[in-house]
Length: 307
Image (cartoon, rainbow, N blue to C red):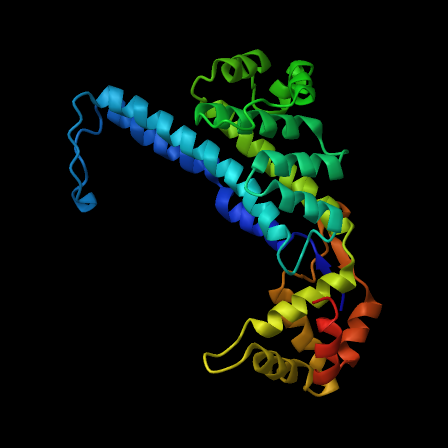
C-alpha cells in the first residue's frame, strides 16, 4: 500500500467556498440582465417577497454592483479560510516562524499575505500581485483605515506585465485595472473573475510548497490524534473516546489492521492515487509499516507526543 496527500484539507475547504464561483456569478448576472431588459418583471411566488422597483434598470445595475462586491469579499475570505485551516490540526503549516507571523497578523488578510510572501518568495508574482491589489481595493472601497495601498513592488509587477496579464487572465487590461484601483471605482466582472482565478493559482501553488515541506510523520500524528478524538460520544471523556477508537483500529488482528489504518488515513485526506506532476506528498512504506506495528496503547503514546 502506498498513500499520497495530493491536496490538503485546507485547500478542499478553499475550493468549497470558491469552486465554481465564476459560473454562479454569471448565473446571477444573467438573471439581472433579464430584469434590466424587462424579460423578468415580477417576483416568483415561491420567494414570498415583495418586489416593486421604481426603476428595474437602476435596481438591476445596483444589484450587479452588490453581487460583484460580495464576490470580491468572498474570494478574499476564501484565501483567509485556507490560511486559518492550514494552522489547525492536522497542521499543514508546521513552520513555527510562519505560524507566528500569521498569528501576529490577527484578522488582517493583508498582513497574512505579507507573511506568505515573506516565507515563500518564489511564488508566482502575477497572481500574488492581483490578490494584493484587490485586497487593497476592497479596503479602500470599504473606507477602512488600514491596508489601503497595495505594495509598490506588486504594482510594478502589474505595470510591467501587461501582455502576460492579458494572456493569463482573459484579456485583463493592466491600465484599466490600475486606473480603477486608483479611482476606487466599482470592480468589474472581469476584475472579480481574475481575482478568483488568481486566488486559485496562489492557493494551489502555496499548497504544493507546504505539502512538499511536510514532516510527514508529524503530520500523520496530527491526523491520527484528531481522528481518535473526533468520535466522542455524549457520555464520554475525550480520553475515553481516543482509547475506544484506538482499540477499534490497532486492536484488530494484524492481518486486518492494514485496511483499517488505510481507511482512517483516507478520512484524513490521503489517497492511493498518485498526484499529478509530483505536486503532493507521499507516505513512506517505512512509516506505514511502523503504524501497523503499534498496539492501542503505544499508538496513543506515539500520536500524543506532539500535543
